[in-house]
Image 1 (cartoon, one colour):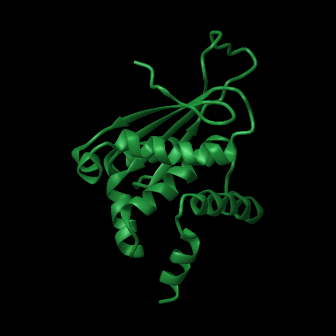
Image 2: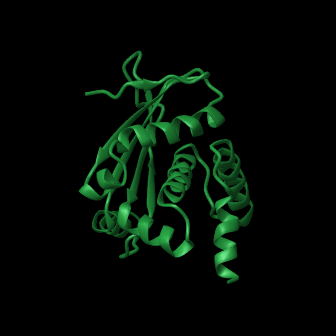
Length: 178
């Protein structure tokens, strides 16, 4: 079943959420709606096109993220979020009217919960930050160099501020200094 598009002022963004594990539904009764709200807010700050796109979100646990992290990054440890941008070449044609897939974002409830507790912030705030972070990866942002990291962090801070969420990097820095 195709997800309903979230209509935005520029292009539309269809969001498909696959929730794996009771922890996510205990955290929020409707994790799909929560993801749609966060990604819709991010999309309205990011979209400069009239094209239609889609993104898939998998709400998983440490076991799945550790497996994916090992398989795709060679790191045998869980992580908080992984992004898998779709790499469509010129020869990859989509049927007319189909949204272009941006890719997949996979998040671990376990790591997010531990990190939020360690940082002393609400889980929903940390989740929002990392979902936005994953979305930025899908559209081409990265943090491989200091300049790229600064640009990506600036965009995250702006999007989160528009959502009423404080700069997550100030929170992390204040925890390091305490």
